[in-house]
Length: 250
Image (cartoon, rainbow, N blue to C red; front, side, top):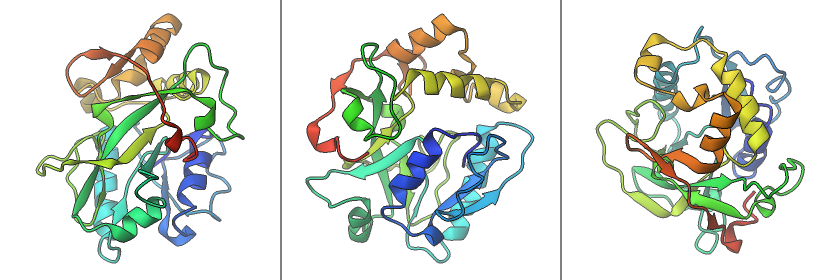
């Protein structure tokens, strides 16, 4: 599901189109107004979805209903946000299609890594291979999401876990998160999202709290130094060098 994401949606479509045909890629467009979804029908099935608020609660309910519907005639359904690319270990699988062909579990939980834009690196060039432009990433438990399934999942808002099913992390299936691959792209997304209408329930439950960090110095401190890792407090980012075997994934 997307709303005004002209940076990451083209990356998402290009990546998943390598493994799945147009008739098996679905984009739910939450009333985008920036032109980012105007010409994507050749790559996916697009459907406009309407809701007056920017709401993780509404989003998760909408996606769960769609997953349940798709599972009536699909063996597996994958859900990701458009800044998330699922990639199995290239030393064990040819690619994501190979992983799905060999899949035999009811559900798979990814191991999450966030790509990190170091202060000494230039802005990302979206026309060039992405991971070759970044030296670091860091592991994040919060991105260990259960996103591949052949049974309906009862996700919590944010899709970080399910309410009624314990799913072990599959160590050789990564969620490569692009949220911090570029400072300026993220800040622009931050400002746009902060300006949307949010439901009182989402605000009360602190869903999407990070989108409300818009003061420049506070944003920089969050972007370069701090991340939420599934607990109640922010953790210090400790970057790790991206192993070379992953550099050709994106």
